[in-house]
Image 1 (cartoon, rainbow, N blue to C red):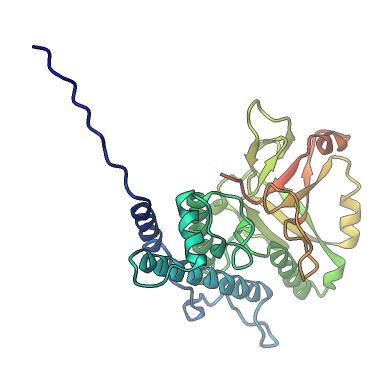
Image 2: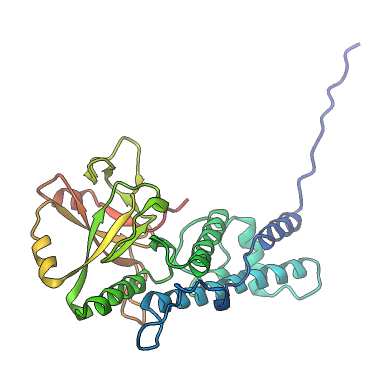
Length: 306
């Protein structure tokens, strides 16, 4: 006797169940707000005139921005959960958030201006958000790190200005007469970065359009099918104007633009800075004609889109 084939249909979860589980999963991972009273003595170290060191002021501003975002993420996740249960009214904003979670899109209520420019899908955005908050929290609790994840900041231009202010106060050189000369290192692990006297170590940047030789500390042609390469720790050395003019005469350097996202476009904000372009890094290159890299569209990115 031939037995019949039994087909079992598994019931798919309802959309509201998916969103409820997703929101609950996010909510339990949202970090606590950072508090200045938990700071390391070096984080907000006092200057001789009684003020706070420039990088401490910058950290305080970044911490405030991240605390606002953390509060927004937490409060909206709680309210969305209540709305799905029918305990509060499902407003247009909450409905938009509900639909965003279904399609793996960052809810507009978490986006700019309360957040930072980012093209990542929802799950990647949330992991990146947690890592950013973790870095700023470690700086708060443990004091200034030896290398800064410059990509994680809302306003990386402010970090660079404050770094120059630190050097200006130490050397009595006017800040307008200072600039950054970037010196890539062979250090891939930022935790092994040495302390620097005149400037800061930064990490977490990606280069698009070329490859990178860690041994020679310079640009090279891309490997096949490799679109992005993460750079090692880069020493942003603060130099005076005269030294900068001498160094820029070196033909073996490509003036590489740094962008926050791969969109490579932005608008001027109220501060006069671009919302996407950050600055130029001088990257060592074997090419004498730096137009070679211009034609390949080589640029640095603070983050990838995945």
